[in-house]
Amino acid sequence: MKISRYTYFLLLFIAGILFRRTGIPGSLAFLALAGFLLGSTLINSGIIQSWHQSKRNQGIKISQALFIGLAFLFLLARYQYWIQGELIFQITLLLSIIFLFLIPFQNHSKNIFRSLIPLEISRFQQILLLSTLLILSLTSVLLNAREFHNTFRSTRYEEYIRGNYPDSLQTEANVLIDQNKCLSLQCKEEARNKCNQAFLCDSLRDYEQALKWFNYAVDLDPDEPEYYYQRGHLKLIKMDINEEQARSAIVDFNRAIELKTDFAYAYYFRGIAFAYLDRKEKVCPDMKYAKNLDTALIIIDFTNKFCPDSGSLSLE
Image (tube, rainbow, N blue to C red):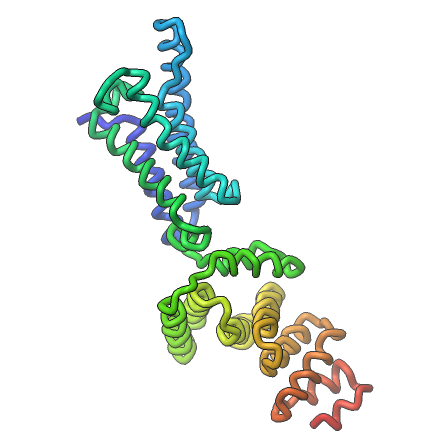
């Protein structure tokens, strides 16, 4: 059986989705190229065939390949996050199933695959193309944003959302995460298991893997302050620190404090992160508040440096 270019592009498109799922470097560009080739080739074929059909029948005829190509381009936009929002799900599904109604009416055929455009592909390749489109479209519609991301990306949804919102817009990030969070008890239990796995990796000094497990835990149960604190602590104390890492840790400590306002250690380590960033005006309040919550904390080194005139010695 001769394999058409449409089938090649389809296989490349599916491979690109799998590459993105595993996090292979360059997968973003690979998926974009494969999806664009597939969609644009089908659209081009659909336009040409619509033109020829219209000339023969002296009326407007719309090729099914045109709708199929548009649907694949919308799927590509969704997988690449070029378009955000639930509306894109509905558009993709509409475009992917509309040809099921057009084919019988235009071709007056009981077999929806008869005369399907492009004509040069075999029945098997037609079924492969259409079934793949329907499966991917239905998957996109039935999954919420979090489930969609976790199915088709190597990162976690919570991690992705926070990474794409600046510090000043973390409230908006919290809203999105809360809207799409898992509500089952099973997710909470699984989150605890992931946290335990993170502790194990931490004890083995495999900090990168520990971070991945903490990301899983936070994504599964974003209402547990302990997970944010542990992740922030790992970033700040255990991993190679830099300015971006310190800011990310502060975001975690902020969220832990929002969920548990008397979280002394979250205040304390947030103060350390501010000290690393030389945010002097932020260090002293956090250290003092942490000390008020837990008198066992040793803050004198920080208060002497960042607020020496505040009577910090008496706090010890």
